[in-house]
Every structure is written in C-alpha cells, then in structure tokens.
Length: 136
Image (cartoon, rainbow, N blue to C red; front, side, top):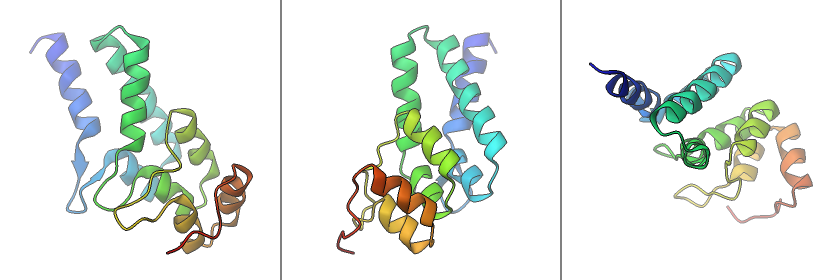
C-alpha cells in the first residue's frame, strides 16, 4: 500500500463508528474519560488530513465536521456536557464544535448538562448566553 492509501486508511479508522452503539471513536473516548487520548487522536487526525491535503482550511473544516458528527443520538460535545468535562467542551468548541446543535429529539448541550447534574457545564454554557429554559 502506498503512503496516500495508508493515510486514508488511518483517517477512515478515526472516523469509523465503534461497537453496536454506532458512536465515533471520539465520543467513545469521551464516554471512557480518556482525555489524553482525545488530545492525541485529534492532533493525529489533523496531521493526517494535512498530509493528505496540504490545505489548512480544509483540515480545520474536516476536524470541525468530525467534532460535530452526531452519532446515533448525540455527539461528543453533548456527552462532554453531560459528564461535566469542561476541558473537553473548550477543546471541542475551539475546534469548531457547534454548541447550538440539537439531537433528533431537540435536546441541546444544556439539556445534557442538566441531565448529568453537570453544574460546571451549565455555568459554562449559561455564560455563553444559552437559554436554560428550553422546552424538553
């Protein structure tokens, strides 16, 4: 296999959904509280994208797409909000995560933070003017 094929294969592995829950590797790592691996994974993903396509804007958009990718029911940001992982919330938003995204049932990050009794996450999003009185 040539280098381009190897890079593409690694990108596909990162983007692949894990197990029966059909969640991304990123969301799986949030679920398992593997913060260091998340940082490594996202750096590696960006580096691979940059090797494949030497366009930084393309790479940033693709990373943003990845952190916003909704799994079966939610995305990595929703889960980080639920688990009160503010370091990850800041990382994902810094990489382009959209904290206004809702699940198919209309639940946003404030819903997830409230459901997880995640006071720090709720405060973080309230400071960014997200409504705390959204309908369920």
